[in-house]
Image (cartoon, rainbow, N blue to C red):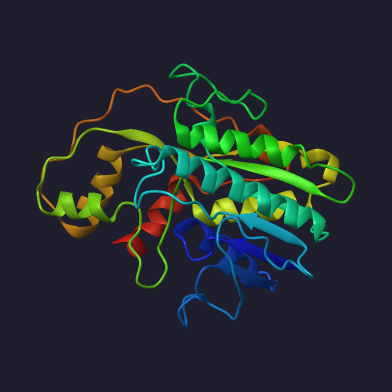
Length: 289
């Protein structure tokens, strides 16, 4: 098999590439510029790609679409002062890729969506795989509309799937900072930290889910959204692990009392997906520190 990944050098895209390399699969990275030497653990093929392009997908069996244009460091609110440009670049760009994949004979087209497509449901609601999208941000709207456009292309030999992932954490690539790097620095410096909690998923578990989806019968996943989430994590508990590991005596932020809507991952569980939970977080922490 051969896999192509857009946004492959980003925090999330890199996990799909590394999982495929570990499985012995040929990987093509679709990015504006080639990855730096040694960025990935093994050799990859590079093809130049920017949102809106119709890339060369010859001999590619599956595409995972992670590329997304946004204000650096922000997804919700990532449109900045240009909502029209944000919508046009991400929605039209994604649709162009979906169509190119179908026309090239790609079998699996996996789209990295987000739990943001369901953020409009009441806080504390249980979010199932088949719950209709109800976004309340432009980011969520873009993801939801892209899902609809992708699913409309479903047909014999073309298996479109949306990965509705929650917050993704894990070690960054060479020269990059992970998602909690600023938070850890603030804690080390004794700066005030606001209470917060949310759902998290290790990037390796996300990539493992994509592998299971690609191996599943087409009728079980084609045209479907697949919820992917793991732990409900409070900043208090995360920073307690950091404090213990580094001997930090600064006060921890209070536990958050904010309600959180949990993703039910029934469709992924039925495929045999079992994420690593808190054990995965604890074993990952040294690399994050």
